[in-house]
Length: 122
Image 1 (tube, rainbow, N blue to C red):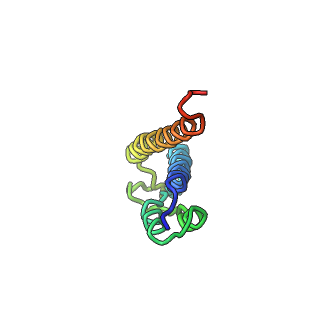
Image 2 (image 1 turned 90 degrees about the vertical axis):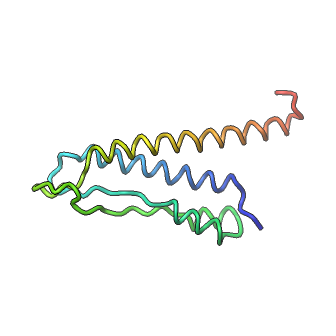
Image 3 (image 1 turned 45 degrees about the vertical axis):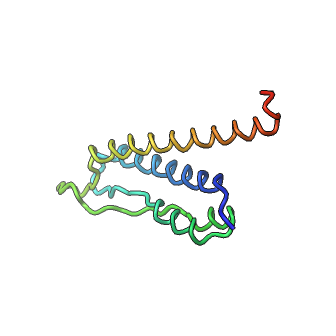
């Protein structure tokens, strides 16, 4: 049994949305001494869940995004690990991915709408 594409898209949107929130938090705390930047990982978990899950609910339960703290990759003396350039790049990339997945969801809904109305547009 294959997992419905809608469940995959939903899990991707959930992970990307969380990544956007975490990245925004990182940017907001760029000047906070001792703040440890966080990253969101979900793509590998989603791939594994897609291979193992029997249905959409199982996939959504298995493909839970994980949040990790980063090390002090900036070398800042105040212990803050936010690399603003990296965070802005992550924000941009995540926005593009989110918009692409959201467009796929919208296209699927339009297809279903057309099927349900027998192509009459209403």
